[in-house]
Length: 495
Image (cartoon, rainbow, N blue to C red; front, side, top):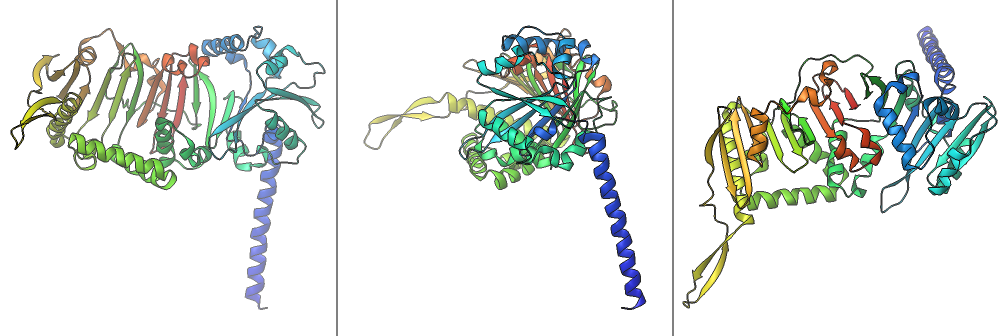
């Protein structure tokens, strides 16, 4: 072995020593700065697809939303009301929630785990545990010998409780053994965030074929086509709102990307996004690779609509929809779409939309005309006739509006400032342009843009819309989700 080889080996050995040293330092910090602080994550099975750790802080007492949700929870479970101080005594300021998938080949279902840290107290108020039996849930009290703590596990199934017992006995792996999860949660320090959340989006995306709701399918496809890996969030209070974000840095206002300044008072939801051609490409590519059956059905439906209404999605509509778009739906099923369109595509897009609407109305309300046959008999033909379907012009707020009303179905649109505003009701356009009493976008979102960002995507869901799915949301005014593809920033706001 020559001198050069000896020096190379010594150099490599030094590099390995430094790497191992940092690994040991990392594990030491991981164990002492976080693992020891979260006494609950080590009871969570490693296959959990979601985990959230909470701490009840004095700030929460000042949040009306959380106070309302707490009261709703106790009411739903027929439990005696407990104040924040009582909850602190019950939970030791520390509890967590985990979601674990049930491994059924034919469907996507979940089991749920609640963990409470009762500290060193010898006695536990059983009234807050007995309700689990009434709900068909199970519970077990663990004793953490290392920290002399009592840990209560409540599960939605007996099978999951048995699995948690195996995890506690170290016979099965825990989520705490996933260093990536632990260290990413650690970023959201308790001084700033009262909750830390982990969600395994990769697992949910892999189960897309088992999901029947097409809206959820497309939402997952949209998320996963632009994001890889799990989602980590910190939750905190901000101006009586609950904010969950994946970005630790303060976010400052640069631009409001909503194309419509006003929102109807009976708003159900608002979606704002940009670059639809690229989104369509990435989403369909992702579906083709991950849910081939749904992808095939989606293409089949698209081709059917193109044939019936005489248009090409990729060639005639999609290229004109590359800029900011906003879709609004009200509780009485009025829909308003606003899109920024390149000037040279605006009139061409309007003409194609008129044609599609006419074909749609003519298909839904065909006419019957007699036809003379070669043998001089007559048959009745069912035909799609657009000859009597014409858009008429009118004025609203100094702008030209085009209208078509057929058998009680009304469509209207205006072209202004390189934008098209299209609706299934003239009234919603009139209100948006002329009624100063309806909410401005920034008012409806509680001045949220005062500490907002130029997110390229915004989703606004009203409280009543959310309540139709989850009763616990009865106290929520709205949920706002912001996402920015370029920076990777993601934020969820509840008020």
